[in-house]
Length: 219
Image 1 (cartoon, one colour):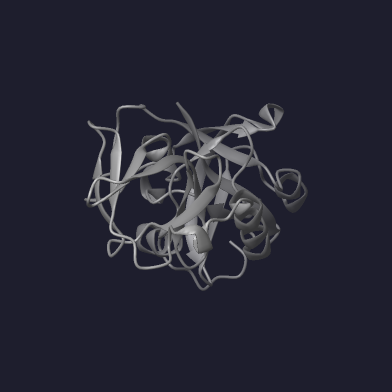
Image 2 (cartoon, rainbow, N blue to C red; image 1 turned 135 degrees about the horizontal axis):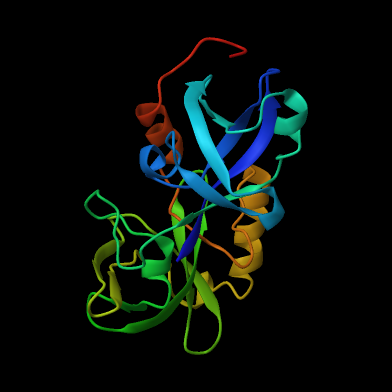
C-alpha cells in the first residue's frame, strides 16, 4: 500500500536541502537517511534521502543527486510516498494509520448506530473522523480519548461516547467534507486526492525527536 509521508516545500540554502511537511508519526522510519521514496508526480522520483535534520522546527532533507538550490526548487510541492505493508501497525499504542480507520462502523457506547468513517481530517488542533450517517449526512467526530472510547480493528468498529449535541440533529453537518478541507487549507495541510496518508497528528514533535536539531542556516 502506498501512503503519503511528506510534502516537499521550499529549498533551504544553496546546497540542495529542502524543507518537508511531515505527514507521518514515524519520520525516523519513513524519512530517515537511506529511505527510498516514490513521488507524485512520478517523474520526480524515486528519491533517496541522504541526510535529515531539524532546523527552527522544520525538517530539512537532502536527496541523492540534488546538489544545489535549483535542483531543490525543482522538487517543490512533490509528494513523498512510501510503500507500507497494509497489515503493519504503528509502534505506539492507540495509534492507527488512516487506511485502518476508513470504513469502520461507528456506534455509541449503548450500541446506537452512528454511521461509517469515510475520511480522516487532520487539523492543527486535532484529528477528526468524518462519519457518513445512514441518511447520507455527515458528522465530524473528534478523535480524542474522551470521545472515542475504543477501536476494534477485528470487529471493524469504533465506539464513541459523544457529549450532548455532538451527533444530534443540531450537530449534523451536510458539508463536513468541504468545511474540513477549508480548515486544512488555511493551516497549510490538506489531504491529497487519490493518496492515503499516515496520521500526522503529532508529526512535528515526532520529527523533532527523530532528527538532530541544527542551528546552521546552510548546510
